Image 1 (cartoon, rainbow, N blue to C red):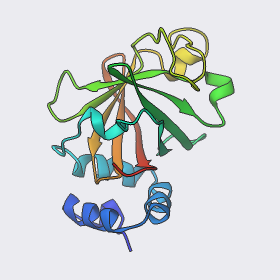
Image 2 (spheres, rainbow, N blue to C red):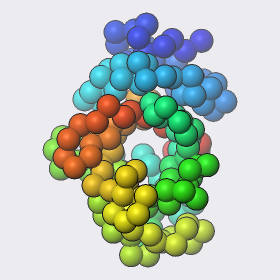
Image 3 (spheres, rainbow, N blue to C red):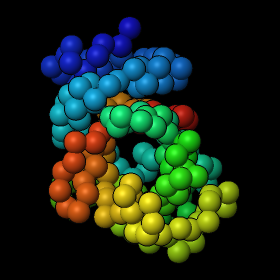
Image 4 (cartoon, rainbow, N blue to C red):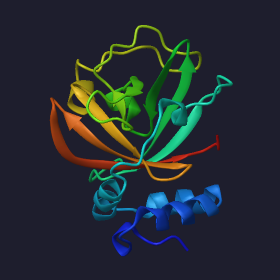
Length: 185
């Protein structure tokens, strides 16, 4: 059994349990985490380094990261990511996509904290990878409410789980989320 983040004081307890679990168990755990648990997990993961390579596979296949966020609605989603040329690109898939757009993003190293990764929605997608939705701006229409002027700060939890917090217009928000990588590295 994987403990809840609020039940531990050391991330290594969760890392060990998650790394020893199968995908279905990890995904169920991620989907069980409400906002309080996500906030605690983000704090526990401070200093846990990630690299851009964590989010994609070198074979060019799309990697799905199943997510659960702390918002009051549309809490389940996917971030789909792929190495496209020399950069890692992604977009958001879920029931809200027809309404808010795909939210194309670039995955890159943090400009602020070594070992943290940014999911950068401020980047303008000029060419979408094969199978991705067509490029759409994140700073127009309803998309700007969700993705405009936003960067997600990602921290590592385990070999398959990461946790993030949104920054909007340079300010920390109270929006958190947890991702469970579908395929192992």
